[in-house]
Image 1 (cartoon, helix red, strand yellow):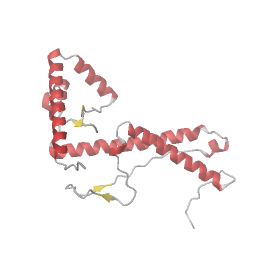
Image 2 (cartoon, rainbow, N blue to C red; image 1 turned 90 degrees about the horizontal axis):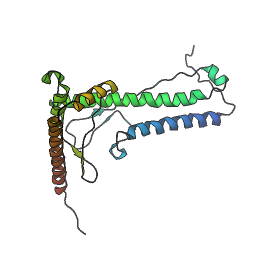
Image 3 (cartoon, one colour; image 1 turned 120 degrees about the vertical axis):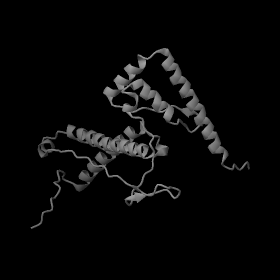
Image 4 (spheres, rainbow, N blue to C red; image 1 turned 60 degrees about the horizontal axis):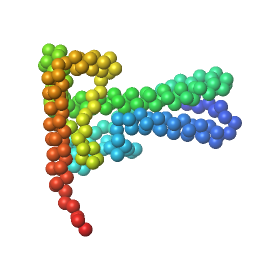
Length: 209
């Protein structure tokens, strides 16, 4: 006996079902891209559609596994029968949120593993639980980047909402000497970032013609 489950059709014409499925898929894609764009410049995003592994020709780290993301949403037949169209919006938003959550989880795991592999981490235990001291240690340990115009960019810090409030409160309560040191370190990091970028560009040969 066959165990295949046939997808129910609620449409008189097949093209109507295909049209709705296409619309829902496109909306999920658009909303996921909007969420992603808030963090990543699209010029730094690589889309890969085939196979399970990829690597840059100059990469020394070997191939990387392409991580699968999945999302699930339940729609009751009674809602379809009763023409409860709000479930379409709920479905689209839920799928986009779930996929975005999976993407961010994988991003943080990858960043954590990469930092751990080279020892580029700052542990809370190293500073006796002193949050401001840990923050300053992180600032001294990282390198700043630059934008497409070569201007230094200060990094972003990603924390949970509750941790973020605790961190901000702790930093705001520090004496002015602490904030002055943070600014001095930040300015030095910006100069280093600009200098590093200038050195990188100088290695290219430019054709003046």
